[in-house]
Length: 478
Image (cartoon, rainbow, N blue to C red; front, side):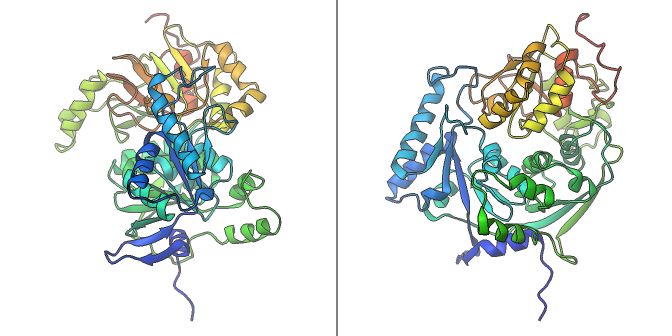
């Protein structure tokens, strides 16, 4: 008897299901779990209180990424507020026997950057992390879930997650992207279309010509922001690009295991006729660089767009627009192109991989950061930093007037001292533009790495895809 067609998500879910609880939740085995500094200590304390231990320390990894300082030459004393988190993670690693990527470790970095970079996460595998952007690694064809502190305790103690299976959505990204338009622009545009709750209750598979054309690192960017429209996780079916990316990674299969893994990975796709609960088509052919103007990611327009007027908006959306305008210091009808910039941040688990830094450096090379702007580049991992320095990208950024930092979450999370000043306008490659996210009163605009680099040079938000149209703009008249 022929089995029913399955989605990619079905295949991975079913392969990892170990049972069903009385309350209807299914028990899904986690191949790997990564714990970061802001939640680790709480989970270890809960384990100790309940006299339990880490079930699979060999499949458990810890990272210091949110709280450490990223300034060059950092030590524990650089950001004393982070010391409690570092000490808690070190104590947990020693007590339970798992690998910790500590500050100073050659492989230290942001959890969702080092997980695929080192082969901790592989196509078809499952991954849990107490961070909302765990879905990033779906770009590799993995099924990833964010978990809270209580869920983290459960993962550590049982190596499983208990949850009801979400519905499934397939998003077709159709057409061909224009030169200079990126995965970051695609995902921001998508959130603008369906809203910050448009994916609530769903797992998402990305498909279509645009998705297949993206590099693996760009797919990470796409999946990274799946959580920002409320979905549980996002995934892209692996292909030959994926296999080339994974092959040879530190923890990737080798020898006969490699041959078996490659064969299995090539079977990871949604079968023809597989049924999704919802399907969406998005034509990306006319897409331009996107810029958020407000305080959530759905408040976004193309670079030629203007800030909306609450008076002409849907009455249900008007209050949110008014609040965003007040916080961002904007008036209706203001073009986003030309907004004066104080800070630029290139980094985060969204856009701090080597491909992102190469793209930004290509814009920066031979130019200078505008006098009014403080601009920093924070690689997503120590490995990315080493590779960037090998390619000379650090010199490109430094020569232009950027600060070149150590790896970590930095201004994305605002959990260390990498903060802007109240009232400053910040252009960032990160994933959230919420109120006070990058510091009290800081006004954040989300863009791609190339757009951020151009804003740093011009001192204003500009369209990087228009050669000759932005290079002459500077902040001399500001």
